[in-house]
Image 1 (cartoon, rainbow, N blue to C red):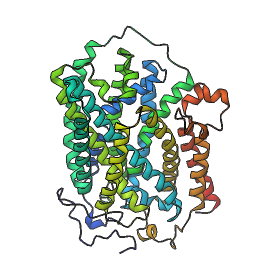
Image 2 (image 1 turned 60 degrees about the vertical axis):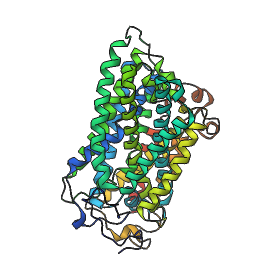
Image 3 (image 1 turned 30 degrees about the horizontal axis):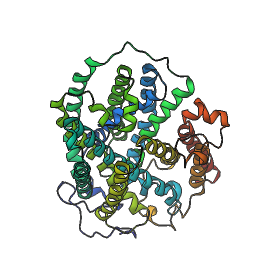
Image 4 (image 1 turned 180 degrees about the vertical axis):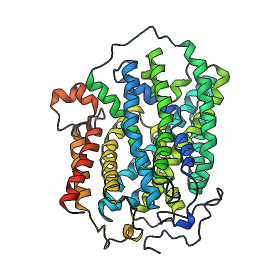
Length: 480
């Protein structure tokens, strides 16, 4: 047994959804592997099937794009981002370990702590955003039903119920997640269809916007890519139990299609809503899900709220599960379930801040997405290039946990490529956050920062390209 086994000696019965999963970043042996690639569709679809995903379509058009430009930006951004998630899932099937354990092959056992730390912060951020969105929706919907219900204790109760569900499912782990995500998908999508039927007839499509230039279009694409690329950190976590005999194309395809099809439908729906109700963009910036309840009939508010809370649970559980594994990959010696519990506490604190303290929701969200999106883009490109160049035959289990092994303590090519990609990427993005604004966009002129080029935040895409290309070149130079 390798030196980083996370303190659980009892073998996991991975077929029992109601038994706490014991496996952490441990290698999944051939005897423990089961299932088919198609089972990856439902959990990935459910993780993205929420009205927050609809809000992304609103945000894209809100940058200043016409509906047609916004729709094209969604299609292009998703088409570029989710195949990368599928590629990372392929690494999970080949490697039998979570994403951030496999990442050691590209960065070295100790060098991997740098990207792992950023990925960990990213996952914590996403799960925090998810539960905060649920609480904000509770407040808005309750106010629609009766102003007297939208009190702090009621919102706190909704917030508390959401986080308890997320933490419990996350602690039980892999098989319970796969089981509940399927049913959440059905419930959320059925509600979305009813919402569509109720709202679309009331929209006014006679007002058209002129749209923006190429830079703003690139900004819309970058925003969508930042959303999709954020899921790469969990790409291998859900495919690592698949048999090594699974078809590689099927593993990548079921993951990419499952993860990308819900955003495609829902973001385009958001674009459509914004085209018919331009004022929706401002309302969504303040309350990314609750804003969609404004035009609903009273009888549909409770089903809408329940579906929203379920979708929040689906997305947050996905990130919480991966963040627990990532905390272990950082070197924290806790069982997987305990690591999830620790992250759950952080999620509660962060979510409470966003809901009850922060003056604005969209401003810190946008700042977080851009800052972390650059790092995740740079890391994921290095990871994928390393997999295709050097891991076609799979990963060596013990080498991922031994600093004296073939991967060494540091892989200079990986670490340098990531650092350069992040430095370049951060220099090409901007933020409205007063604390981050002075630290970003340093490669742009003042005019560019204030104009459409600054708003485009092309640093996410540039970081991905720089990281992968530089790693391919440096790896050959260092004769990997």
